[in-house]
Image (cartoon, rainbow, N blue to C red; front, side, top):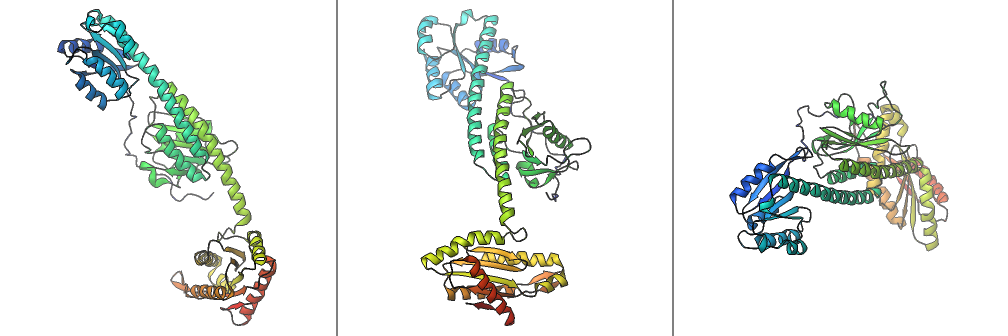
Length: 489
């Protein structure tokens, strides 16, 4: 792996991102048309602390006002609801609105009435989706405390179950999506998208990294070879960089290393690092700046499930990449990115045989850079390599994607073009020769131009190697005739 040119250097002044759910209070809505009821209820509820969270009360003095609050705030846990307000059944109508129109099944509704005779308990409990029914006269401070805490406990259970259901749906959706991804870069970008959606947060500061499992530092920590595969938000300029001890955020770097060494998630107040296991392959970590340290046990368990599923997708992407890399190494010229000679023959056999059977035209051309040894001797092999790469790029630009283009060896190239009549083939390759002749290479203030000799075989055979040999013979004829020309059969 080559050394990244730009290690991650984040500004130390980057603002700390506060988790969205930190220290959030329970929201309890009091709906009653009597001011005194609000005052007494708030006084009692303000003393309650349940699961480390205080209660924040909201007040509505009519059913209509309560509906407006519920439309703005979808995080209300308990409603203490009077029955008789602007109408004798205003509270009951609000229950219907909440459950049926607003589709809110999670908020716990506790009916309170000063006139129980107008709303008989048996009838109300059966016909309306409420969770408790109390007469105002029986709701002492202690009973109000018990009733509200019971409502909060019930709300917590229901919201936890719903959160788990949504979380599992997201995990399944994410797994399906990422299992279809095949490249490491696509996988990493997908993780950023899926992770931010799963955690319901901005994808700001999330980093995906991979590590060479064989590289370790003296203190047994992975070092220097942590690669950023995808990044968003304040980290967006760091893609394809490295993470090392020169980074501005040393704490972040150490946590990423720790996740990779210990092979487990690391969650702090400021960072969440998720470790992805990938079998015998490299490890990977995704980092979220502005962690989820206040997540409950259920959230953390879902994160574990999520990372285990991501690990499967990561291993899949790595296996595919390894397979593709092996295939490319066996079939691709490493310098130009063109097909190598082996791949040329493999792809050319069916093209030539097919043209022979169907009696259609096909052209096989051998192209040689004139006096290429002089380029290497005069300018050096680095310049020679640049000339070869530029030659490969021009061939890809000039010929069709259906044509087979290869570096045959050294400074020789070969093109197999199906459905190309002889006169058209000669014109096409001659045009390519002339275009290349006009190319100017700027080398340290001096210029270099090159020419090519080309042999084109258009006598269709059922043997691709025979056509290549004929094109090679014609190429040498072009060289003998002064070079920088095209010879054809």
